[in-house]
Length: 86
Image (cartoon, rainbow, N blue to C red; front, side, top):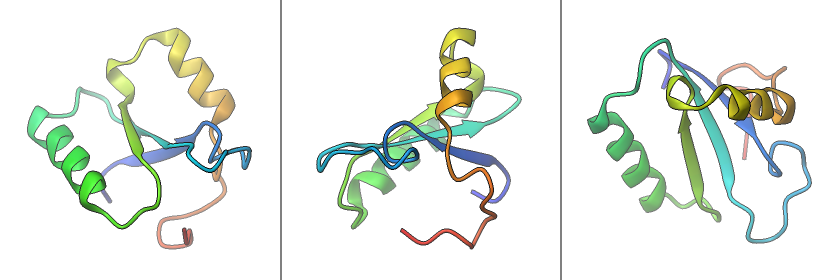
């Protein structure tokens, strides 16, 4: 999703994940993600070869409290697109 900034957060981003922990991603936007895009992302991640579930959070649709948690928990903030290998 080159048009959006995406933050990883939670246990996988902090390197504290358990075997079955999911990967949490926050898509940073100025307006809510279109429903079609949210559904496509969910479908694409479900059908991917990733060994864990991926939860996608729409930044603009989350509460201020949850945004603060994401900002504290986010990881890989120093990486640039194309530099992260999972």
